[in-house]
Length: 490
Ligand code: MLC
Ligand code: AMP
View 1: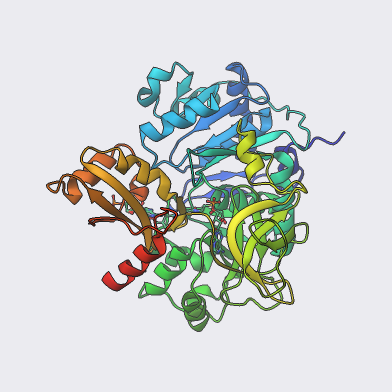
View 2 (view 1 turned 90 degrees about the horizontal axis):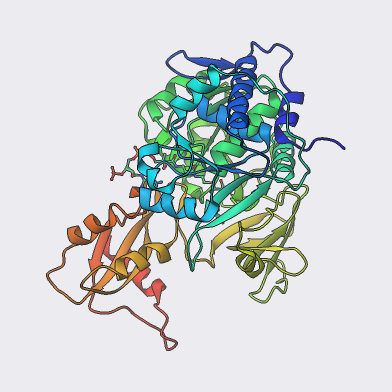
């Protein structure tokens, strides 16, 4: 049997010269392929010493760093399930993930989670201990369906669900993108995305690892740094905010991008306006693709064919797509429906929530994405809306239900509705419409009470008080009316 371990695939494609740089930072610090293989082997040794075995969850909430990438790879090596969390999550939010996933080890700020009685250490301590220990070079034997990672994604109705991704889910998607985007070993990837989500962790890093290529590894988006590094890079992957911020920068010119081969955008809709402005400045068309935590990438505009504004391209070669009614019947070409798909990239279900998994799967294996889409005759997809109640701000998903349920429990509040208003930088911004019982309650009272319960990016940018919420005859809040009212206000 061939070992399906994703790390074995990466290792089989390492560059001949292991001194080739894998990750490099602006401050001059770098990690070669050989260094990365050794540090991840030493971290694997430490995981082994801590009795981490295949299938154990390792929960990780750490700042972006080269060591964090090695920790991810070490988990793959020993067959542990990597569980990365947004660094913006509050302790209260992380408590939920710990309870749900029951990790065997946590790489976090240990004092924040001492009450859980789970072995935990900081990334600095882990790195130090690993470096002083013995490397574990053996790569655990994995079957294609064995889990590599769990990424939490919120639900429209309840708490977050852990999307279980197997080694094959990740490797099949990475190999497809590598071919589709004509990845080259001498590519230099400009990486400024966070590494706790599909986009920065899997799509970006996996392509680089399959190519044995070099990555400019930035701690976060800093447009001044992008401007400096664009002439030394060939590929950039970002959410639309990356491109609007680049365009707004006074030093962003055609000359800077002459050596760039590919600009990729995804995780949120790229406005046609941004697409055309970018083409005007650089002469290059951004390649927009569409994806989800549950499946990685699903569609992509072509590398060689025409990239069209407002479309996310056809299904990836190994993905089957259809656009359906609520009941799962395909709609005629040119009509709007809900996008459904299946393929080797589709996840293994939600962690310990078979009923939630069943709700989103058709009996014939198609996954119901919750995105509204339309297809043209050539199979090119445009995402035109969402059937799920979801806000995407700067590429982060925010579920209104989660915020509403917290606001509704605050003293003196009757009810609330959370909606998006268009935002020039983040695409969408969170706005809370609140009905209060006690008229002395202010916007600050509400935002202060949310601050230790919700990550900052989920907190409403504005609270608007109303006497009541508009409801239809079924009693359902009419968020479209609220959104229209907001458009007139801002
Ligand atoms: C930061 N802030 C945000 C925010 N990011 N607010 C709303 N939405 C966001 N996305 C807030 C901070 O809390 C802070 O608030 C202030 O903005 C400045 O923080 P910052 O860290 O300096 O922000 P900045 O660096 O400007 O970050 C913006 C960003 C970043 C867009 C560059 O959020 C980002 O890198 N997003 C990418 C997300 C991503 O990787 N998504 C992929 C998901 S995978 P204050 O008020 O305290 O100052 C997926 C599948 C697929 O969707 O298809 O890819
Ligand atoms: P996540 O759950 O964080 O993986 O986010 C997945 C969601 O992001 C999808 O269901 C879409 O709603 C949205 N998304 C991703 N890429 C695009 C895109 N190119 N255009 C529009 N929406 C996108």
